[in-house]
Image 1: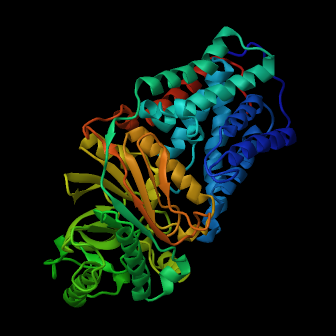
Image 2 (image 1 turned 90 degrees about the vertical axis):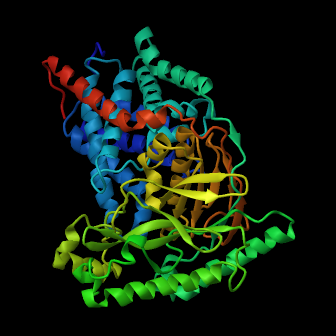
Length: 560
């Protein structure tokens, strides 16, 4: 609890100083000063706490503006899709940061600065993860800055990114307290260092699970530019992936290495629309939305044509025509799949698995759709808005999200492997990865992605940072296969095992990568976080709200 009220801070100095604080947080992000996130972000949060604790005129507006600008910079890669989304993202996410400043000034009336900083920052960071996009987004959090501190990062197996954020924010609050008072008394010191010591103890007490060798995978990344992927004939894009698969398999054979158990392509790289099994005999029972321009009378021939095209493509991929895949190798790819929802046929973004004979044996649907790119959140029913989006993007974003993470079972030489499959944007959401591990035995996670949109920007490093922490917190390897982006494999300790590179770069490169990700020796073993994850963010948000309400006992209100 603060015994001396700090001097008020005028608007212009507040704006400048908080811009410096948020600038440090931005620079600490993945891909800005290096590939991995940096603990430099702790200094930024400390500088934020030191100045945001001070009341003053227009404090809320200044903090919203400073945070909004740097959130927009953090999401600046979105400009490659649609630039108005950049200021919108800054505006929305900056609001939660401004609210964190309000809460911090309240909490310092009842708590020490380290405790108030940890609770204010973490609770509002969690709040923006609980609000669905586009009004909320848990894209990059301070907890990710601990990734290259393995003795601390291991505690994510217990409290995930939420706990790591709390630890680093508490430490930052301790730095702010030290700067303000030139010393740390027992209480603030305990709050500043206690969570860190607890994190170190948890990381040691609960190490990464024991592992055994997993399946052999061949990742195929053709690095097709997004403009070409969207406009080129599908045969051209398909052939590029197929030829690259040939080259990778031939290289393995020349080197005397065994054939992979699974060949993996990236997001929507099987360039045709597939028909879900539940639709194959549904002619006359389902309908398409009017903007699909498919009449009820034309549905049977449309579905039959899609089925014929899928069979043709699979004959090229499997050994029947070209010998592309060895007889024992299975095939996995991203594809759009038509599924049934009531009386309607809906498109989904999916991961599809084929066995060695070319039979489709499983699918997993993308759970979190990109607002504006894959979903209009019901606004597609407005002809005016639908027409505007179609004119801008060339299609209507009306995909259906999956309700759960799909589990694909790969038949291997020695055993079956259970793979939790996800797609691109899913990579930024913890529930996609904790839910399947909590509910069933899972050997590894596989992310199929397409990051060609972002032209080698630091968005690629952000995605890898998310994958590393997801591997840590679920105790499962994460394998990433992209059309273009960063294809890599990460073990259950968060350590990167392999990454596709060419000529010294991992950006927009074409090639194949063989990976052999380890899997838990006991697939039933689950770290505590997979059980705590559904509740942690809510508990922290509630704790911040309760703290703010209690602070109203102090009759002197802070400036907002």
